[in-house]
Image (cartoon, rainbow, N blue to C red; front, side, top):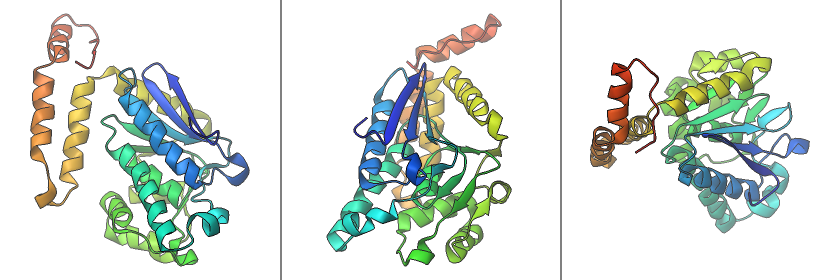
Length: 262
């Protein structure tokens, strides 16, 4: 959208954000972080879009982390680091707060910031060639609370510490056993599997899906920070919707429902 290194595509109800820096295995510059947030926010605001998919161009990587060659320019000094962290957190938040399901379609390297984006998605599907790592301990980087927490919530404290402490790469099957990914799919079938999953989700009631995503997000917060009224409002919106009437009518008529998201 705002940079040729982050592309946005729309295919019916499915929007796709593509990291497009294949010469550097889709390593993420500051401009790419900013563009990722803008792309996700744009798709989330589009009433025609019901599912958002993130992936990387080429056949080598989803995203091989932050572009370290630009650290001297983009992360030199306290103020620059704070700005960089603010931009990256916006990208993570755009996925978590999208109100629509997000899927990471992963092949090849999914490292550092690339992995942080993937675990900010709701679902993760990967090819057998996928490789995962957070190399902060090899770079001397401090890793923020929010990022560590997201990983702990996904794989638990023991696996999270192994990932951080060793800074080594884990293969697709190890990632599956950790719970880091939902499924490992043969590379030739990965795009079709993700497309089928996205189409299945898109055909379901958008308000119900959004309500579940909202509820899961509140569950993952500390108890004192939970905004349960948001869950209650989302549930009421389901029962007050035309889609609720359509779902019941379609069931009685033994036909697939056609949901409008209202």
